[in-house]
Image 1: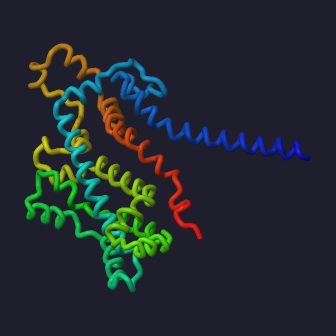
Image 2 (image 1 turned 135 degrees about the vertical axis):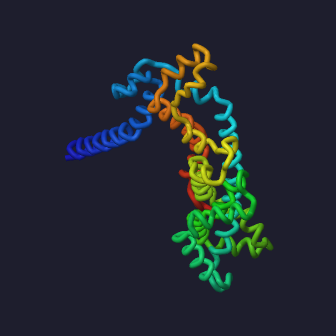
Image 3 (image 1 turned 90 degrees about the vertical axis):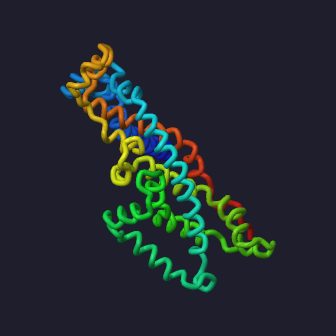
Length: 297
């Protein structure tokens, strides 16, 4: 009987592992296919014969992207946007979520603020009023047009607010007894034990700023001010007859080896790399206990 149960348990574990491996392969295949397509030849990509491995291996698509100085210019704009926008999102999210996590008797008017936030999250003023506001504030063609309209991510505020509300009240009460004010309580108690939630919303902000391209098209009139995602959306393989005479033989070969499919695949790979580098550093906070051992009764 014991051996039968052991065999069933092992069979169930094997089945679970097999299902997880299949899910992993299904999730990884689109990324792997995109990588293989980006290194494939133009004719193979257009013929649709690329599956798992590159066909006619070449670097033409990446060379077209990386040899353009405008690419690095757009990359720096996106890095600047992520740094400034992520910092603003983090600061304003925490400063708004902390008082809203208090009870109504300690923060009069809290419910009114909450209804206002929920209304703003569900409804927006529209694209044209937003553009007019940004233009009237003379923010067009500046980095502030990309970060200030979304400076307060309401969804992140609600997440952090609910996280703060679930923390033991004994923590803040002990801080008050020790003479700590609201700012010290937030900086020395709430933020250190809220790293998993803060890392999550920070990752949301980073991904949101990095992947955004539409606002760059709206608020930037000069191509040199485009963020990376807006810039690569403008990249297509077009051969201008007037440009052919100025290209060298090697540059012509690279140009004719690339296609829209391989170039678009290369775009996806290049833009994913920074997020793939950042994510492991934030991932380790997701597995930590939230307030394990912080309160003992």
